[in-house]
Length: 433
Length: 143
Image (cartoon, rainbow over the protein chains, first blue to last red):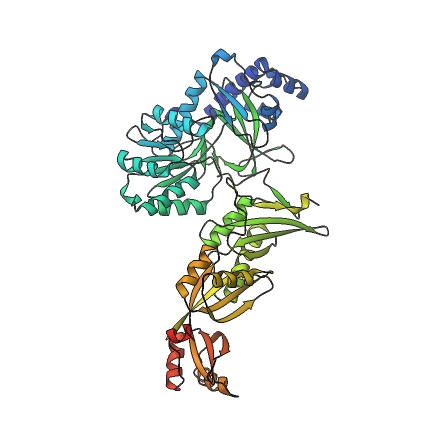
């Protein structure tokens, strides 16, 4: 189901013209109403009138996450508080949270693009959408909630957690669409096994999974355990929340709803714009958002943009599944390495979610990479030669995929520290010395 | 005829072996035979115990990676040439030994050799034909 056929399937030339018009307006609004943007553009020597078309976007300076912190809480708002109808904030693990505001109009745009997201996976007004993203300051729950209502579907605002009840409602309400993090979907599958619930008897059809990085191997695992198509969705609160981009049923890249959220790929080192098919950091400009305008925001997510046509009929550019973050990036002997790439390789070798830690050290001037992998019972063999073959297989995979040699160490289960939230995957000893 | 042997993954560092045998001791599991294969990084501890199930639940409960392997226990005369008399017919028939370890029985003149064969069925046939006695599992657990 294409929710907004006009905008989602628009001729690309026409789309660019509209994007250009909207960009001019967005820059003007930011410059006139937010002292931060006025100062930044002035320092950069750019005036709103210098932005005449979409091509001029590269003249604009970048906005960073830290700019939100510096302007906490409402310094980036472009409208008076009486026009702000909602605020959201992302968790601030390293300082103050990132606060974003929404006008009534913004909430409407957001609902539209979340409805498009649900449509991308084939959702219609006939569906029952169970929203198992958290409700609250986090954008996931309310974003998909409004999207479901906008689509005309039946929304079950279950929020996160309470897995037993999630399963009960799925059974009793006939949930067809599930919105949650990919890792939570596996938790639901595990609970179903424990409770003896046959997930194949449920009406589940599509899962809209996002808010954390995941891999193709994980997708296969989810689709094997749950009777649904696992769709990758993307969004971030600084831009709007969920509903920035979504895979369609082709599962081949995420359609960016670029009439509202304009994407670019840049080289994270030089800031230079990169072309289609080139890998780099994803940057977004909000073309229509009123409350908190956003110009060239550096997401620190690594992706690629594709312009080729998609069989689904949508004409928007597609972004590749986010494969890592610039702040996670390790430079090992001059090679850029993302922990997610290593996780993906391990998953391919082991067939399950691996427990591992990456240790980076220096011997003399040379960086050394060590990957410690826990030996689970599915990997364990009674024979030394088979364990050595496993080590070699991981070594070879890493070398052929990343072009670097790593020491592979097999360790006992539970020797790798497990945090309450995200596991710490990288220990960079080089920083300490 | 096959005996259940436990294999435990171990990092090659101080105290790992001590911890495993301490856990088994606390669970009142008695070790009948033991062998350790190792590389510079890790090792595999192979054990034959009197209570296989209890040993497995104890070790898994403490997050150890354990697997069960079927091995064959052969009684060998405890005298020069004893082991050769068992290995000769095996090698003559082309039966491959993955690994083996031996211990001496108390109060008898026999030694017991634990074999891990590539093909246990073929090995048992060869041993039977050569008239070599294979110990039943129960006998080995209670040696």
